[in-house]
Length: 632
Image 1 (cartoon, rainbow, N blue to C red):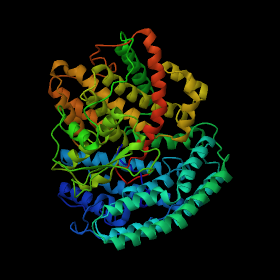
Image 2: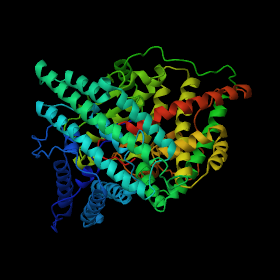
Image 3: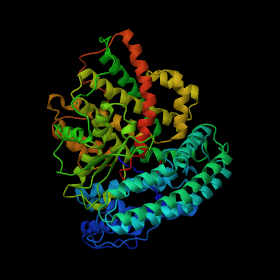
Image 4: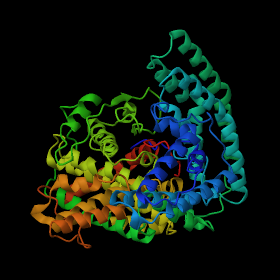
């Protein structure tokens, strides 16, 4: 997952979109447009400290001014100002006529328009933005943000301590907003409250081993800009802030949740709220990177699940002794795996020669995170960080495809490839297209498993089980939160997909707990594989994997409608036509499989994978690759 990192100061980051200039009515529209985007980006990073510190390596060399070191505020007024600010920027964007822009600028125009519209629509519904939702809520993002706070100079350590000292007051604002939401019937379901309590208790009971102490001290030890005496003094200050300020604030949140438990007015999913359907539509648009309706997405995911499971069954037919126990033997540590992945990038356009730093999180850092990638600053493509929670890695195979997701050809490769392009504009660094980004990283997992050295059947089985589970979680999310399915109706759908209805209650509760969160993975992966299938169907023997991947990567993360337009143009240039009708994985080679009696074992194993994925996907929910928007 990339670190979506999901951060804090959401509202402050969005407010940074506000511009203090008007679009000039000059003759050279294309020059003015580039100036508009550059000045907009400069206003963004200069208006919020969190944005600048995660987006820029050396702000001084870029001629930027450092913003005030603060977390900002969070209340109803901030949401309103965020909506107004996004609309204001949209109005300035719309002052330009796309017909007068270059082809490359048109992409920038339509990509930015989609992004701003998505943010504007999301923040129209402050009551549905949960502060204390477990794993993906604002509070989790606040503390997670600091796990890998970069120290470039001594001043950054001071800034860090200034920010963490504000967390107790920021939490008080969250509590005030949550109480106001609950008074109107907007609150977590009881299942989510219980999980939130679990997360709070772990943070509180960790004491001196709290993640905000462990990670700070680990990161400080790696920083060369301080004496040992200074480091010890900073560690003492941080421990005092955490133990005497932040942990008591968490205790206050725990009391609040206990008090408000049962305040939720909606009986079922998000759509049961008066404004829930509109909010969920906006959330799906943002998280899926598409203008498809929720009904269209649900139908698409159902098709992916049914046809994907049919392919998996066919794949397994004839191999009664298959148990998916084969393990990668020739790779064990992070460096070896990443080097191997980087050396097996056939079929992907050559990327820039980049540096990266993989490392394990300190023991006890995060019970739910498996790994994440932090996007390189806009002015330093070599600062790529991959963090892995070794305690949560079940086996070498999981480590391998997780690093493919985070590293090569996943997030690290995809982001640096885009940043290295000559026409790359800094404002793109601040945009998040979750469906595209997570979809790409999930898509490449299957390709790289085929190159892992595992036997063909095991590699394909692991990839398909992983992907189909993502698809199932995403479909259940829409069924519950968008279409209002009851647990029994969800069970009917699960059976249609090929799963047991015995998991319907678990799936229902998880969908209530994390609305929208699973969509980027399930929909994104299925979308990329559908585009590949359709392109293969159109071109047949003329299909070229590297050319196909270039079309996906070119122009960077964006809404899938633009990706599909690019593929239509590409296929037409080769004398073909991208078909609308297709069958998932129909052109994939099926050489081995499993008998009827072995299907039972496969189903049991598949259900076990589902339970594991509850943890795995939550990793993605908290992988912070963008430290910009907290919209889950």
